[in-house]
Length: 261
Length: 283
Image (cartoon, rainbow over all chains, first blue to last red; front, top):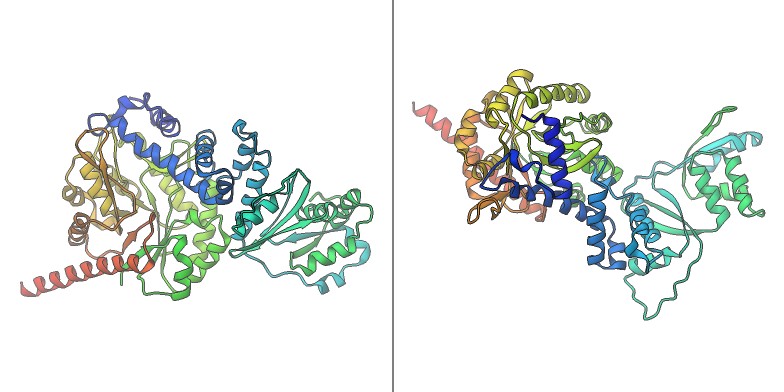
């Protein structure tokens, strides 16, 4: 009698790959029980493919449903979910699309899908009460570079080598221009949202660097230095004020000497 | 009203906006753990309705163990909405860090019993609450099974003291698919351990394993079929009044239609109570 571990290994293989030869002799149910495993195989593949289609409707609009379903099926076979929350499944799908050999004619596909992933992520976030500018008045100016900030849960920073946000606007506004000039260009994007709403903001490289560094938990001083590397004329004071005025900051804390974020 | 509905994300905004009459609401927590906005709405609903939590990702039968991180996330949600019941399935769905997004069958033998016995204690300890086990919908069995599903469930109850969620539709379709008698199955369950009933729709399709025959698939995508309603009435007479839940997960109908199914479940239960009271009075 096979141990349970061996049975589950064989069944897992049958469900994910469709190859039921190993488990077939162990099954009962009808004359050819292994054929009934198609119910589990179908549920595994269909439910996950549908989950990806629901998460990436704009990407499906861009490439067509047939291409999308084929890519989703390959992804599902190669990368089963790691956690039981299917809402979290698909974070690797944009990279998978970017690496797909079938994707050569659309070098911006991975970036577009990544933007869509971020849009979906921020739209289900919930805003926390924002810190008011007055709370910074109590910070001694010399301490400011060591302050770290916590930003709203519904904010993402994302860099692409194609202006994929312009494509996304076409999708969101349901417009189909007769001719659309699309050329490679570095873009720095902030995706911000909560409770079913979102917006996509284009930033300059320095502003993007500052905000992304802050989001990563680095102190304001580090963020300012990195931003000035991108643009020597960057104004950290103005950038900080904009961040706070935009309601993006939910908490501030002072980093202790020598403490890593 | 003791009949509730499975609350799915497409209905949640309407529920919050209209607060329609419903006995209680059951959620799949895995739909909420990574969705702060939906969790916020669910928390609001939990102030107006009793809730229950029906897990689909705990994988109590997995040889590679229970995902402790998942249990901790579940505990946070459970503490937040304080459900009246927490349940899961007699099945497995995780394997070596992969989640297979289905409820996969188990052989019914001593090894599986020992494994699940330990996992039930682990889950209950971690969640701080009793964990009800639901009978599965079955399409295949295992030659290595040394006992029937009912015997397995009875032994699980005896060893762990766990309670059962009796899915009446699962019994009907599994009995059809696997060739046993649904009424005998219900007769064999320990009535004292039944804490909740489920009813859901199933879809017939041709049985690839038995040409010309029909297989019933647990789709939760259609109304509850008449034979399942009849079996529900039989289960109520056997177990007495229990909280019953209408499950509808795919091809969702309008909320009003779903609530209508819950009203029917309630009316059947009320009718049986009245009939049995009259019967007792006439004795």
